[in-house]
Length: 171
Image 1: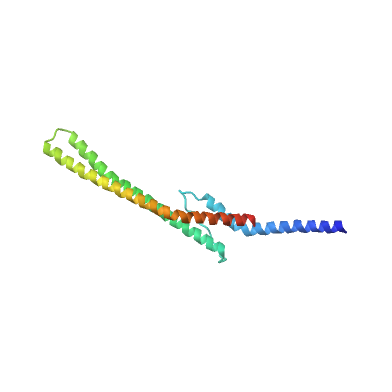
Image 2: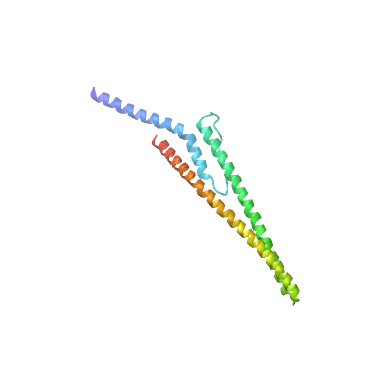
């Protein structure tokens, strides 16, 4: 009789384990899909979006939040690319003007007045170039200051993420 009870206990434990494993895998499957998609996201391709389950639960909130975050990051990266393109163009204009002025002045001998006028134009363009460079450096410092303030929030978010992932894997 005791062997039979031990065998039944063992069977009950195995059945409970298998049922728990199947049930937990089924519950965690949507999260696994989200994690798999998250791992595919790269800085060059932010087109990945998550489809809400339609249940109105926490998973729907998570997918909407992730999609909103991806939209904001995508918009920020597009704005940054546009800014870099515009800044490059603005920096290139004075350099081109200075180079062109120098090349023209070196083509033949000029009067002292012509050299003075050319140097004044070169000086104006070089000041413009310096002003643009200073403005870009100031923007860079401000962006660094903003990133530093928000880095604390990022640390808390990472901590929250690691605790949640640990909870999911332990359950």
